Every structure is written in structure tokens, then in C-alpha cells.
Length: 258
Length: 180
Image (cartoon, rainbow over all chains, first blue to last red; front, side, top):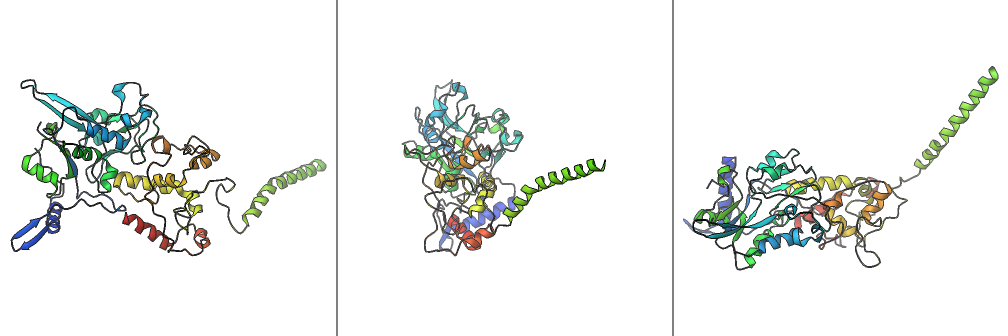
């Protein structure tokens, strides 16, 4: 597993750590500290996102239920794609349908052990989709969320070719009744946005919310740079794998039990 | 020969007078005390609730009619790339406020010329593709709060005159966004 907490500016990182410790820990007595997980706080609406955070999801494949589709359904409903958007039904072929998140089933040939896991945009630190984009439409936000700016996307689909996770879809036909918080339209590429509109308001992505409200609880969302966040503590204690770690993309989505 | 020259001169004079007439008329109109708003001959529906008593819309109407596209464009890039989600120039809030229902109580879609955005854009032959991706009807409740009535405004004419909202209003709007 490569180091997640690896921003380019080491000195800044150290400063942030100190500031974080000062804010997150209360001194009960000399030498005794009570460390509290900082509550998720929304940034003010008029402030830009900063690189002091990096959002990520930890997927525990052991808890991910075979046959459960709650995360996919929740994503469809939240962002208005797939079954949640009737204007998409006319799309010509099933392979062309949008897929922001999908369930993948893996069977180990030797042991016959079946693992299921959700697969979506892995929000890489060095996203290949952004590397190949000729217009700058694919980009990574300061807080690590990889997005498509559909205003400048020309629909060339290089990013779909470049993505090792097949996380992106192209919209082939006219759509109607999109959600105001998730605009999407013909001729542009789209993918998981980590529910960026919800995250900016201090909420968690729809898939994580749905998974937590079922008995699964396989998804953990949080700030990878905040060592007191649940996701960081889980990763520190139990570790988490990147899919295709050999590519060195340093993904924001990590898996356990695969 | 001189007769022909005289005739020619007369003809030229007539033509120049004819050409100058409409120009003079326009100049006369410009001399009027107040410049008309763009598309002021158009009947544009007003929203049920105004954003503020002072400016009406999020900025004075004259500013919005001329420059709404610039404000939306600026907001678009800030929201997309920096996650700045203030509501003042949010396209969703434009729709929330300006959407209208037809006789059947259904929201008018943008293909219909009665849609607020379509009214002017049809008239001015402007093709926009905002609504190929964005919602042209309200979906969720507005997150804008109209200014409280206790903050009663001064006469609006002075703000419209310089096409800018007063610093006080802008401060209020900013505070409101921060509070969200």
C-alpha cells in the first residue's frame, strides 16, 4: 500500500498536522490527551476547497453483501441516472448506458470464494483521465475529487480509454429531467462525482449513506489527511488496498478484503 | 451641363436628408431622461417573490438583463472547479424563482416560448444550451432566503442608476451565503 498522506509540500503537511492535533485534542492533565474525532464541518459556501483535505472511501468487501445493490440504487436516485431517469431508457444499447457505480463480483478460481464490491471512479491522486484530456475538462479538485467539467468537455472519450477502472460513461442521446445538482447531457463524459454537492455541504455521498443504513456498513467516507477521521484510523489499523496498485495512481477509494 | 450638375447636387442633398432623418430621430430619443432597459418592449413574467426589496432580482433588473450571462458564467467556473456554492448567481436559483406554471399547473418547460429564459432568447434569436444538461424547472426548495423585511431599503432609483447594488446589499447577500 502506498502512502496516502503524501502531499507535495512536506513542510505544509507538518504544519497542518500540528494544527490538527492542537484543534482535535484536549488536554485533561499534563501528558494526558483526549483525542476526539473532529465533527464533519461544512466549509462556508463562499470559500474554495483546499488541498488540506483529501476525500476518500474505504470499501470493506467482507461486509459488502452479495446481491445487495443499495449503493447503486442510491447513486441513481441521487444523481438522476439509470433507472432513476426514464429519458435514458431509449438509449440504444445496454453497454452504452451510464454507469457511475456498479457492483462487481469476483470468484477466486482456486477457492471458489466469491467477493462482491462496488466499483466507481477511484479519485486518483494522479488521474490518467485528466492527463489525457485535451481540453482540461477532466480535472482533479484541490480536495482530491476527480470531475468532468461538462462545459468544456468535447466528448472525445480519451478519458474513458485512459481510465483503468472503466469508471466513466458517455451520454449518447438527449436527456430530460436531470437533477439541478447533477447536470448531465448528450455529448459529454460523466462519472462518479463523490456526490460533490453533498460533500461541499458537509454531508456524505449517497452510496455511503445508503450502505450505512442497510445492515452492510461496508463503506466509510472521510478525509484521508485527517488522522482522526474514521477512514484514516481504519486504514491505519487494518490497511486498505488500491485496485491496480501497480499503476501508482494513489487512489482515494481503498478496498479491504480483496 | 450646369443644369445637370444642379440636378445632381439637389438629388444628393435629398438623399442625404433622407438618410439623416432616422439618425436624427434616434438622437432625439437618446436625449430622453432615462435609457430604456434592453427588451423593454417584451412582456416578461415577474417572479412571485422578489429576492430583495431593494434590487428586485439578485442585482438590479437593468444589470441582470444586460449581464446575467456573465454572472452565471463566473459562478459556473467557481462552483465547478473550486466548490464555491453561493446561491446568489446560481442557475438553479434563477429557475426556482422565475419558473412559471401553465394552466394545468405544470411547470413550463424551456421548449415553450413562455418559459422565462425562452421569452427573451426567442425574441433575440439567442440559442443557449444550458438546459441540455441543467434542469429547466424547479426540483427542490430554494436555498436562498429573501432579505428580511426589517432591512428596509432606501429608494431604489439611485442604485439602478449606476447599475450596481449598494455595498450594503452586496454585503447582506454575501453574509447570507456565508451563513448557509
